Amino acid sequence: MGGNRVAVFGAAVWVAGMFALGGDAIAQGTARSLDLDTSVRSLGRGGAANAVFWDGGNEWANPALLGYRRGLSFAWDRQQLVPELADDVTHTSRRVSLGLWGVGFSSMGQPVDVIGGADLDYGSSEGTDPGGNPTGTYSLFEHIRAWSLGVSAAAVLDQVAALFGGRTSVADWADVAVGTSRKRFAMALFPPETHTANATDWGLLARLTPLDTRRGAGAAAGATHRVDLSFGHSMLNANDATLDVGLFGRAVPTSRIKRDGGAIGWTLRAAPGAGGPGRRMARCLGPDGALVRVVLAADREHVSAGDDESGAYDVERRGLEAAFGRVFALRLGHVRDEEGDIDGYSWGLGVGAPLGPLAELAYDFASIPQAEGLDHRSAHSVTLRLDVLETLRTWREEGSHAN
Image (cartoon, rainbow, N blue to C red; front, side, top):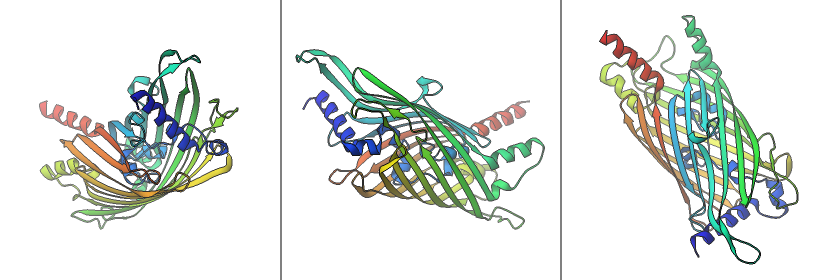
C-alpha cells in the first residue's frame, strides 16, 4: 500500500472509529482534534489533569490552570495516532505561554498564527475525477488556532497588597482560579471544501492547603512539607459549535466535554531562606524549592454531541506522578473508555536539564492505551522554560553591583 493510500486509509479508520459512523456519529459529535489532549505529561498520567495545578497545569483540560503558570515557555509535542494502521496520521501542537503574578496566557496560533497551533494531519493523497484522471495532490487535515487565559484570585490579591507594601495570607491557605479558551477550528476531509467553526472552553479550580510546615509562627527551620487538595471543573466546546461536513445531511455539533477532577499533592521543599549554593540548587531542582512532589489525580469526562445526550458516554482517568525537582519525573495512569473500547494503563517519564537557576529544557514521553487489539501509541514533547521574574531580578542585582 503506497504512502498516499496509507494516509487516506488511516484517515478513514480514525474518523470512522471516532465517529462510530451512522446515527451514533451525530450523537457523539465531530471534530476529533478538539478532543485530543495536547499535554504529554497529562497523557502519561492517563489524562488525569483537571485539578493538577502544580507546575502550571494543562490548560487544554482546564484553562483555569493557567493562573498557576510561571514564566515564559515554548512547548512542542507530537503524537502518532494509529501507528499500526497509518504512519502518516499525526497530531502536533506548538504553544507559547507566559505567567506572571497570578495571570497566565497561552497562545496556540492566536492572535498570531505563526507562533503556534494544533494540527491533526491525515497525510496527502492523489485526487481523481469521475473518469479516473489525476487532478492533483490534496491534504486532509484538522487545524486549531487558540488562545487561553487563566487567573488565580489569591495570587492577584497578593500582588495588589504588595503594591501597597503589605501582604495577604490567603494564598497560603486557599485559592480559586478561573479561565477560558477560544479556539478557531478548520477541517478539510472532503476536498476542496474546508469547514470552520469557533469553540469556547471555560474552567475553574479550587485549592485548599491544609498543611504547610513553612507557614505560621511555628514554621519549620529545615526542609518543609506541604499538602494541597484541589478540585477542577471545566466544560470544553461549551458553545455547541457545529460543522456541516456533508456526511449526515445536517450540521453536526462538536463534542461537548464536561470534566470534573480532583487531586492531592505532597511536596517536600528545601529549607526556607537557604542561601548561597543551597538556594541556587533549590531553584535548579524545582519551582519554589520543590525537591520532591507526589501527586494523585482522578478525572471523569462526560461526552455528548452538544446538548444531545442520546449517545453520551463517560471516560474515567486515574493518574500518579512522582517528580524529583526538575530532573526526573515518573508517571502512571489508567484510562477506561467503554465507548472507545479502551481499558488500559498509560505510563510516562520526564527528564529535565536545568540551564542554571533561570531556565530549563525538558523532554516528556508518554505511552497511551488504544482500543482493544491495538498496541499502545507514543507521544513526545520538548519544552523550554524561562523564569521571567528571576531573570529580571538577576539583571537588577547585576546592574546594582556594577554601579
